[in-house]
Image (cartoon, rainbow, N blue to C red; front, top):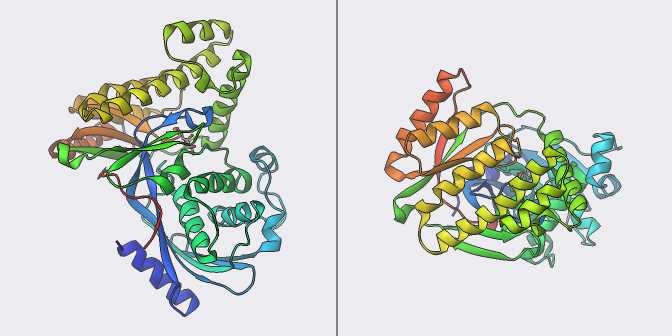
Length: 402
Ligand code: GAF
């Protein structure tokens, strides 16, 4: 399947480089149905791929050089292998040094150069390439535009170079690009969703074993829809707050003597004594979110396997309350949107993604989606917030050659 985004990537390629690309590769953004901030705790997540995607038109280049044009920025950047191989590090090192390493590719280009860097670091001979990128994944909305970019570029380079990189190892490599080159300490959910999702399914991922199960999530035939609302709330201190949550979880796991918070179970016999051992109330809240959220993912999967999608509503809403009260990653705009969606009859609603702004999802009857979206917009207007943008999303396919 091709579309206007693919046509724009091709047209951009032709006008930048003066010849046709050898092929086009696409990778989607994602919505996470449930399981937030559980991935880096070795836990469970349940994202699905959006129909919105990033397309890379590409052709081999002579030598170990890459040229990349992006429609969104209107810029073309170039880099050579020698420039980028010395520029990675651990996420902590990069964060500590800012973007100050010599000859680092920064901005959107870091996600492209990071993929080349991670492939080289993993021992692959990466083909030089000319790339042109177009996308309809909203930027900065928490819908994984950066993972879509990494995944599309990775899929293109693997194909162009005939690299032997099995699909189950690709998300880890794309995550390495983001952690080690772009300097963002994310978990593995977004890259896994962009690369491994299937149309009509949600991706149940065990972030410890990396085992996946494709859970049928055929909303249309159940007369349901997922309404996604981008609140367009300005993201507030996202990277710093995200890193602080991750550190708090690691500190708590250390204090509890477990490898990761995944190892604390949600039944009272496990969770209560674990919470009692933590003296810091903030750590207790963070642990309670992660542990109960893992259980909500498992419960959601059970209901979907049993063909009872509307019954997941209360789990979605409980997830939101946990993110708001225990993990403290919501903002007034997303809380307002969730409350308005529920008041308008959604089965359940929650913020989706890393937090501090971004999107809300609501499970609704398909024929009620417009009405719920209008109620959310009215509630945002009543609070004087930026007008939100809503759309319904059916689960699309993962990264592919077009
Ligand atoms: C962001 C990160 F990139 C993911 O790894 C994940 O932690 C998510 O926030 C929160 O669930 O999207």
